[in-house]
Image (cartoon, rainbow, N blue to C red; front, side, top):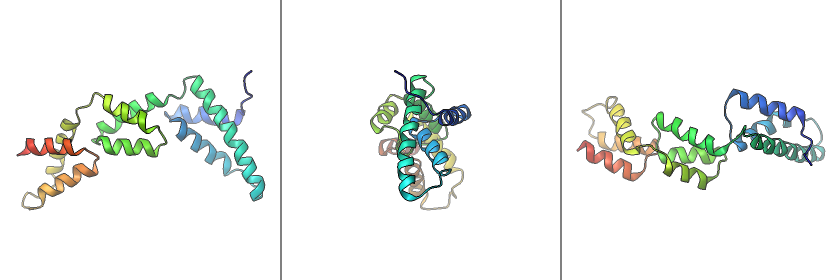
Length: 166
C-alpha cells in the first residue's frame, strides 16, 4: 500500500529539486522551514502540527529517493569535485558535507575514492597565494601554511607542497 503524499509538500520538493541538486537532509530542512513559517497557532498546536509536517515531509523525501530524484551519494561526489575545483582540501570539504547533514562515513569514503590529486591542488593554490604575498615579508612561509590549513588541506599535503617549494 502506498502512502498518500501531501501534494503541496511534493510540489515544493519538485520545485526545489528543479533549481539544483539537494541532499535529502537539505531538502527536508528547506521544506520544513518553508511550511513551518506559514503555520500560525498556539505553542501546543504548533508542536503537534510540526510533528505531523515532519512525518509528511519524510514521506515525500522517501518518495523522491525512490524516484531517484535525490541521491545523497551522487550529491556528495558532485560536491567534492565542485569544491576541489574551487581549490578546497579534504578537511574543508568533509566539514561542509557534515554541515549539510550528509553521512560522515559515506563522505569520508567518497573523499578517499575521489580521483583528485590533493597535493597538486594545494600546490596550485599556494602558487596563486604567493603572487599576493609581499616577497619582503619574513612571515611568508607561515602565511602560506596558514592559508593551506584554512583551505582544508591535510598536513601531508602541506608537507609535500613545502618540499616542492624548497
